[in-house]
Length: 275
Image 1 (cartoon, rainbow, N blue to C red):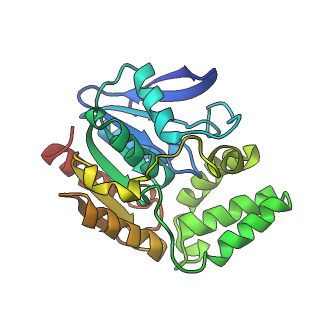
Image 2: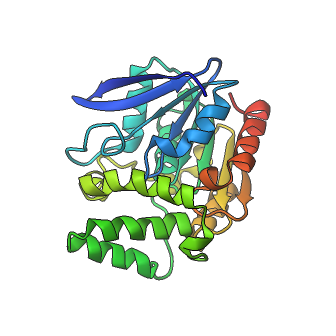
């Protein structure tokens, strides 16, 4: 078990929980918008053997304070790094965390050694087609105040994906995700902080992908929503030198479902191109 240091930092008067371990070049882990930093347990353990690894709970998630209003997630990331005295790092972001990581890289390119985008869309990316039925049902449950149903539908959407039933997913992964998700659902984090984010990038990242200079690895789960896989293709096609890895038998959080494959790919990337 890795020995880590936990601390709270103040960002605009709110407490953000951080955890760090290891030494060497810094890697920062930014969680998805329905989980918290616990989603990175397997990566935190593995990467801290060779790197200084930092993870944190965004406002409204995990051990951090609830969000009081709209949040700029890429500026939140910048504030965390500044508070911890980190001037340059590899940023690994999943889903919403990947969107924030990309916005951060465009805003502060000098602070990014390399970038790993997991199941992420660039800000301004327009999804095509009808939204999944479970997503519409989830918003309906939220309007009715049925938080248990909201949480279950989020897990069904993102952990199970549209191509599997719950029984086909690792039960521990599902249980861990549900535990993390309930905190954000009960706090209403999406509707308070992220439905209308503060100070979005203008123009958005989708229109600026050619500006990214850092080495980029894009990772997606083969069982994720087809529009997420299309977003990965857009990223790779428009970011010079970007590479893509699709991890089979995993959905929106391939790092939780296939940590062996995910960690090996990340370590190989860091050795070749990253911190």
